Length: 264
Length: 248
Ligand SMILES: Nc1ncnc2c1ncn2[C@@H]1O[C@H](COP(=O)(O)OP(=O)(O)OP(=O)(O)O)[C@@H](O)[C@H]1O
Ligand SMILES: [Mg+2]
Image 1 (cartoon, each protein chain N blue to C red):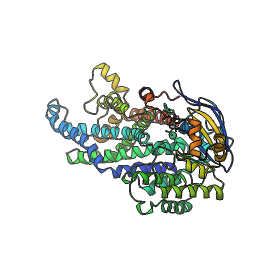
Image 2 (image 1 turned 60 degrees about the horizontal axis):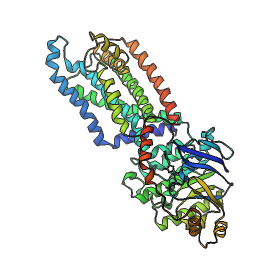
Image 3 (image 1 turned 90 degrees about the vertical axis):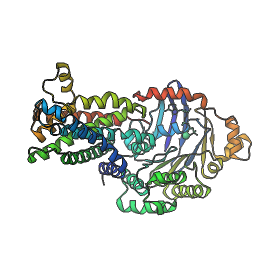
Image 4 (image 1 turned 180 degrees about the horizontal axis):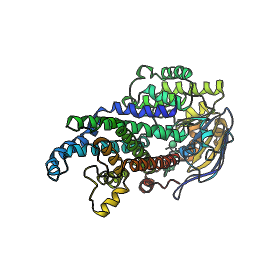
């Protein structure tokens, strides 16, 4: 369903994704794990047509996102790591707009919006503007919206960021159900190793833009001789905190250079 | 429901919800209309040019449409900032539809703003000479609005952060306005200024408004419509192209 070979993405002379290769099978739940700044979101952006690869090949359902963006977009749904709601619109309007974007027929749209807003306990506040919501409520709405249509592949980039345990459980059981009943392929990232352990069938660990390990949660634990996925993860990626501040001034310069186009 | 329609509706909803902003954005045209209209009125009259309110009102209406449409096009910058842009960019809809929906929505809002200022101008004593030409004046407002909403979208697709906004304001929007002849007659301008004016699309918009509203023409109606339509079509094309190339 997803096939990535020798994928590279550079920002200026910094290599964020460095010759990675992996495959995700149809109907699989795949977790893409890695420390902050490892290159997870950058990879997802390339898979979802938001960013062009510097080199390497990519296939979603047999199609190259750079060559057939429209066809590829029909095949996936995504929950972004960063906010992507329209703050001036109500929760309901955000859902409705998404439904129209993804050509969900009216009757089904109305049903599913109610179902999902109830599931994530937003139904009572559906007519409030999103900017009045708490952080967690916004996050829940992002997820509900991402699940409104039933695509072949769902990308979930740290979906549980900032969510309470109740909602996290709710989310993962829903995702598992979708996977089992509709055969939806799931590509997820998370920093909660227990979630990945519980939900994912296969895992790839990326660090500094390179894939350092791949396999089932069981295999990763065996390879490192650890009992928990968290320990295995630390064994693969080391325990030093990723220092992104060293990049800050560099990033700011790049941001300024990007102000005027230069959209590679 | 089509994508163009829902995005158009989104712009209108946002407009209606931002009451404070509506009032704020009407403040400037009102100030121009009243301060200039009554302040410069006596001088203008002495120079034998008739009523200044009468002369300047079409220009101020055009100005309102200019600012409102170009800023709504650049609303893209805010959508980028708040992240909503990503949602529209990964959706399986042709980007040209997204671009058209937003641009037409912004243009509609701009025309509404222009009409509000027209009402105020009427209260301040402005009178159109021939009521039959009002639909034509509205048509000119729509042309100006589409042209600059498309320009706004093109700019919003190119610059990636809010700091660029001030630059655009000072080096593009204000010159477009001041050189358009919205505030002064275009006859007898110094050669260079006249030349610059003739490449300012808003000048044709103002001229069209003035011709239809008070019967005072500089370029001629045909030239006005032709220039505005061609430039608007070109900018819609350029805007769509740039919009289709956005990465986040
Ligand atoms: N547009 C950009 N311009 C410059 N550098 C970028 C850009 N986007 C990402 N990077 C850099 O690429 C690296 C990978 O970023 P990415 O967002 O993919 O990390 P991530 O694995 O998703 O991390 P996190 O867990 O913190 O979300 C980081 O060092 C980041 O600073
Ligand atoms: Mg990330």
